[in-house]
Amino acid sequence: MLVALEYLRRGDLVMLYDGEDREAEVDFVIRADAVTTEVVHWLRKNAGGLLCFVTTQEVTQTLGLEFLSDLYKRRGLSTKTPYGDEPAFVAYVNHVKTKTGVRDVDKALTIRELARVVNIALENPEKARGEFVANFYAPGHVPVLGGRLGARWGHTELSLILAKAAGVPPALAIIEALGESREAISLREAMAWASELGIPLVKGSEIVSLA
Image (cartoon, rainbow, N blue to C red; front, top):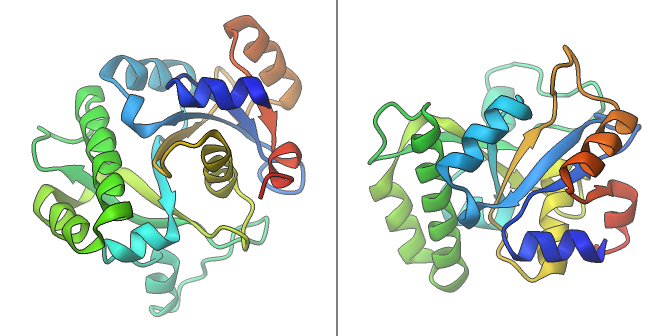
């Protein structure tokens, strides 16, 4: 755990397993302000899941965003996942300086700029809302997730708990580790991969105790 916290502080990747009672998946986690084009490229080629930006529900509300599940429920659509939680998605955005939004360089820019807005939100919520509206458009190619801390225990929330313990801002990027598998890689495979890459792997059960 201590090694994972240090990796997160210095902007390196950490691997996070949620648990058998949820998705039973491993995500790569990194602080958002450390995301470069090279990091996005590596994650796309090696992890292969959906690259998302993570912050707290409080920050997303400051930015004027609501859970998309609430929007869809009002339209009569089901929002329950197989493991019981409602999804944490609040938006899909691109930064205004991106070309198409889908390219590695574009996603890296969008994620870093979202991290900048989160830092502003922690000090000046009104200014943050203005920065967000002026500098992002939707729909885009970077999903934004809002963590329901204390009410949900997915990768979104677990990564935020880890960030708090590490003393870093609640602004992270996460992506599922699929590798060459047509499903999620197993915990055993993930542990072997983590050892090979020299990346710490933390289980959700370890992180819950920090909440």
